[in-house]
Length: 217
Image (cartoon, rainbow, N blue to C red; front, side, top):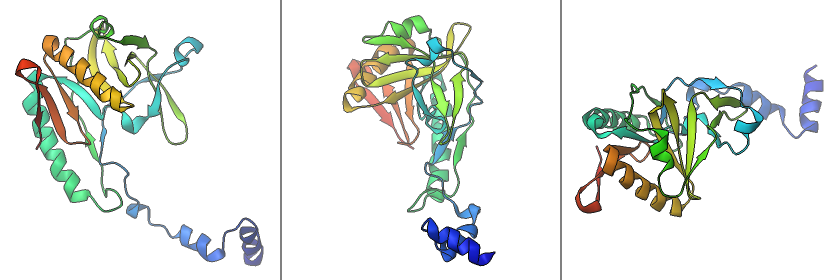
């Protein structure tokens, strides 16, 4: 039987020693490819043909890596970001992270509606995002929304009774950075928001005379 297994493995280009080594991989030594993810519990639904066409699709780990909060929560988010920075530095290795920081942040209404988002310069309403894993789709975000800004930015999130409770962004290009900055400044002027880059470990805030401020732990 061992000889037969050896021949089969050899036929597909795998040596017995390599196969045996693969069997001995310690899963506890597998590293994470990113330092933090959102702990949001997301409800999904099956997309229809209308909501599937044109819906953005991305990995669940990308959810809310770049996200907005009301300015009234600044101290709370600063505390969370400081805690995360310490955790990340303790778990960082040359090839990945030993543990991942799960952000469990209570959601509340942002005093922002979809009408306001869709009135931003260059805005276009799109179907709710579809989240995936490495091997399969999870589904379309229930009560989700997407607003594309030009060609380089997607604003997305979840709304509840007409009010936004989660608002995040994905940037696809260098031009998208400029479009996101313009949109953030417009929203900050009317809604008083902060923009948190979790992987970049920074908070972007609006300032006087149209300037932006940056806070890092």
